[in-house]
Length: 286
Ligand SMILES: [Zn+2]
Image (cartoon, rainbow, N blue to C red; front, side, top):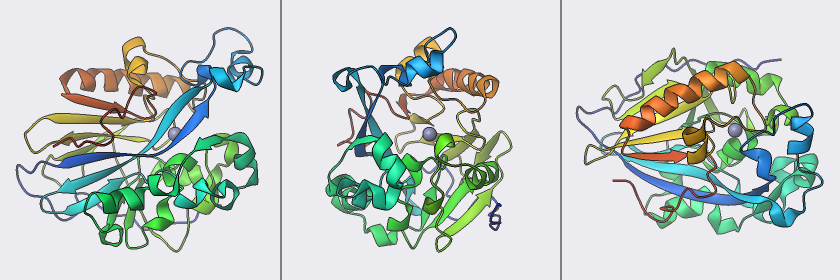
C-alpha cells in the first residue's frame, strides 16, 4: 500500500535570476561490491555470475556512497541525497535491517555521515530545510532522519515504487519515516528547482522508476552534472555500460544516452558510485 504524500509544485521559493551554487561532495561511506556491479556479465546466467559469490572479497571494488551539500545564495543550503546514517558505522542492522547488514560490506566512521561533514563545512545540519532525493535506494535515504527540519522532495513515481518495493529493489521502507516531511514532485522530462536555472532536474528512469539527475550552474557559470545512479561511474558514460542491477533496461539506456549528451556540455561530471570519483570529496565545486 502506498502512503499518499502531498504534492510540492515547482519551482520552490528562493530562486534568484542568474544565481550560481556551490557544491560540496560528501563521501558518507564506502561499500564493497563485486567487480560486475558496474557492468553486468553478458550471456545466460549473467546476473548470477555477476553477484560474485565465488569471487574473493580481495577482488571486490570500493564504491563511495555520496551525499551533496549545495549552497544557493538565496535559497540557502540544501542537500542532494543523505548517504548512510551515522549509526551504520557502529550498528548497520539498526538502520538498514538485519538482512542488509549481512548482505552489504560497508566501511564507515560516524564522522563520515552527512551531519558531521555538513557541520565541518560551516553549516548547521538543523538549518537544512530542503533535501532533494535523486531516488530512495537505501544508500541514499538511510540518513534522512538526521535532517528532521527538512522537506524531502522526491519524484512521485519514485515514492510509489519505494512504497511497493523492498530489499530486492534496493529499498528499505523504514527509511521512508512518516514523521519526516515528504513531498512528491512531478518531473515531466525536466524541471527547474528554483525557477532560476541554477538547479535543473532531469527524470532519468531505468535505475529506478522516478530517478532524477541534476545539472547545476556553479557560481562561476560552469555546469556540474550529477548523474546519481543513472550512471554509476565515468566509465559507464564512456562505454555505455549496463550495470548488474537495472529496474527497466530500455529506459535505463535511454536515460544513459541523454546523460551522455548532457555530459558533453558539462564542465564537471560526478557519477553515482564511481570508484575513481569523488576525488574532490574534500573540495568544492564553486
Ligand atoms: Zn540506486
